[in-house]
Amino acid sequence: KLADVQQSLAVVQEDDRAAADLYERAGALLEKDPATLDRAAAAYERAARRDALRAAPLDALERLYGAGEAWGDLARTLH
Image (cartoon, rainbow, N blue to C red; front, side, top):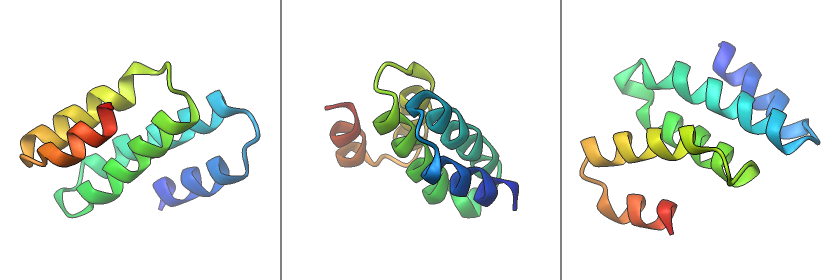
């Protein structure tokens, strides 16, 4: 799948912004399928770790964790 390819490319990407972009795109693709929401959240978390100033992954995590009422995960991510 495209999301898997994007994440594989992000792993070897030395530039943090480029890696975060790839993880964010993978998260957006994975978020479209309810069966892969956990993988989407993981991709967004990786994006946030690679570029802490990027707001979009945090917004996505807030949306995903809020919808699933995963308040502990949300608090951990936003901390």
